[in-house]
Length: 164
Image 1 (cartoon, helix red, strand yellow):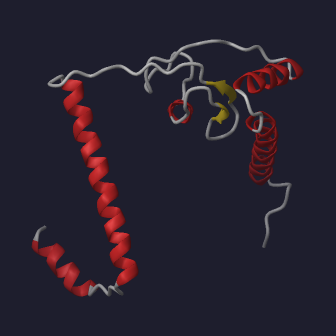
Image 2 (cartoon, rainbow, N blue to C red):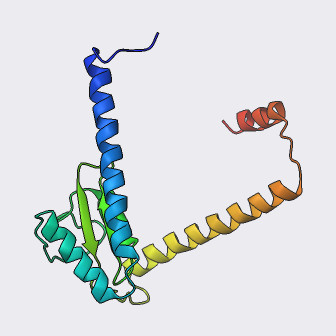
């Protein structure tokens, strides 16, 4: 039996889904109007025009690092911004699409890490780990495509139990 719209929870979920869908479509339309402009200047002019049409103020700000929550409180938004390049314009949104920002990356300043610095060592280990995982993942995909692998689940469980 299908739930009816008289159910408040169903009605609330449906409204949230439709609202998110509407926001996504509107964001795609705005982004399409900006992205296909050839020059940075035309993209900026289009961004200002959209802000004026929607009665939105443009705020210039800076972010110190991916954990800087002074301006954008959600880590997901910061991650989206940090994936952008200099002179990019994009709409970044919270997971529930209740917060949407039209973002222009004016300048990116990369900090230098000195050899032997604790931060350098930390990021070197993270980078090496990520690189190793990607290489092994690619090799695993290659092997799976080349060979048909059947895993004997019983034997695998026995080996797992030996090390518990």
